[in-house]
Image (cartoon, rainbow, N blue to C red):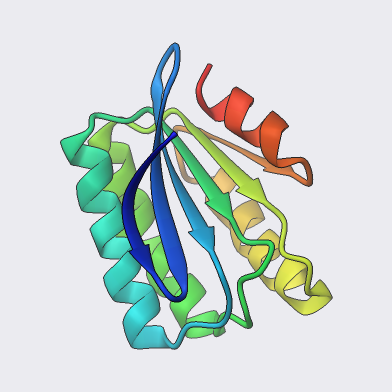
Length: 132
């Protein structure tokens, strides 16, 4: 696991196994502007490193506004398809409201995306699955 970038609210890692995966480990609440900037940076790194897996560690992520979840669905998920993403592992948020909102967004995305989305509570299992 190689650290690619570090911010007070996010760490980005590259995993190299049978395939490559980016891990976005959220460390707390982040406003819309920083959330969007960081997500775009992560997508750029995903393309640069030719990843096929994505790990969204949302355990400590603070509240995410529905407008930001809609932006991720409309702007980011199609970019992940272009990058060649095959597996998206989401480690569930500890906050019950975030679990609900992000879970609903994931269910809607699963219907539209050609890659597989799966939720986890165990970090190691999520990493292993994303790097298969």
